[in-house]
Image 1 (cartoon, rainbow, N blue to C red):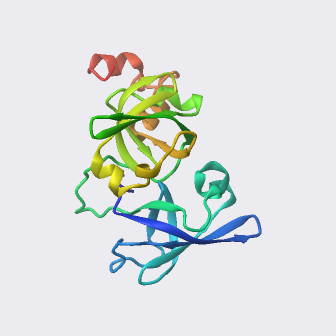
Image 2: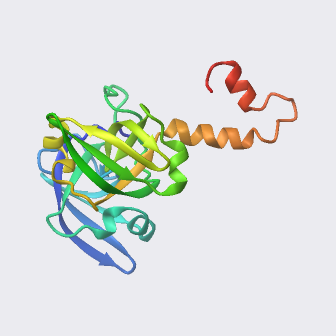
Image 3: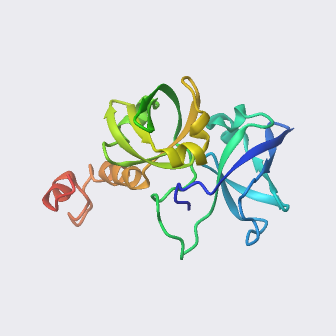
Amino acid sequence: MFTGIVQALGNIARVEPRGGDARLYVETGRLDLSAASVGDSIAVNGVCLTAVELGNAYFVADVSAETLIRTTLGGLGPRAPVNLELALLPTTRLGGHLVSGHVDGVGEIVACEKEARSVRFTIQAPSPLGRYIAEKGSICVDGISLTVNAVEGARFQVNIVPHTLESTTLGAARVAQKVNLEIDVIARYLDRLLSAGDTPAEDGNGLTRELLARYGYL
């Protein structure tokens, strides 16, 4: 699990095709790897990868064909900047929101507008994800925990403050750029539970919309 608080900007050093999947070499910049071990999880632009080799300022990870197809990692080449975050510890401050590193879809930046010292991004998500995106809810964009400012269908807006612009890849993001999206894990599981609730449990205690409404969740 991660928090969506980017710890460092890194770069893709090289990508080695491996018979349909790939091995990724990532330069980690200022990311502190002193406590990391082979087998640890590291988020790269919001994608949870397992380190198979570690150096002083780099790590290596294998990327499956599924991940190359379902995320933006398959389109990254050498020197491409990436957001990096180590997996959280039980003592980690949860400054963002709970992020699994499992990308739900690839979105596209459709507008970038200056707003005082910040930039407001409008992002088009895949249509099936629209139901999970809520105004003032959380969403993860390229591994960055963000608050949704507005939403219409599967198109939403986020406001990026100067610190985030300076510390993440969004500072150089442009219209038409593809981004990894992960919806709020609570929304994902709530939807699943509600779907299961369409068929009440045998004891009559299944989760239903009526039950959630009774306790103020809807």
